[in-house]
Length: 113
Image (tube, rainbow, N blue to C red):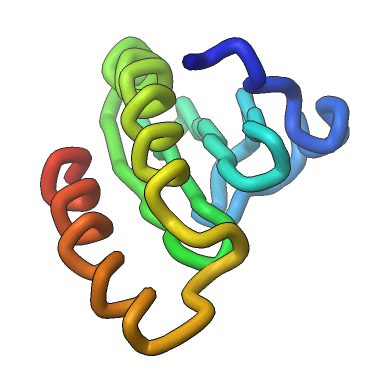
């Protein structure tokens, strides 16, 4: 795990504004299915790590310092890969897919809240 992460869009997003209003400091994707973005604004002690699984999840986590945010960023990678591998690519294909994924997504969010 972890070897297929690379700069999202070749690094083109770095320095831009993130979805939570901070400056994107790190932004990586995994096989075009998973994404981890770290945004920061030191002027207001704002640090956020947002993880995503295409079609399934966008989950931001907020921190008040960079070391905690960067630790979370790295620690979420293997768990995000594991969760992504259990879900149908691109989102639910049927109501049954959604029902089956619900507890998995909830457990991930609870673990990384």
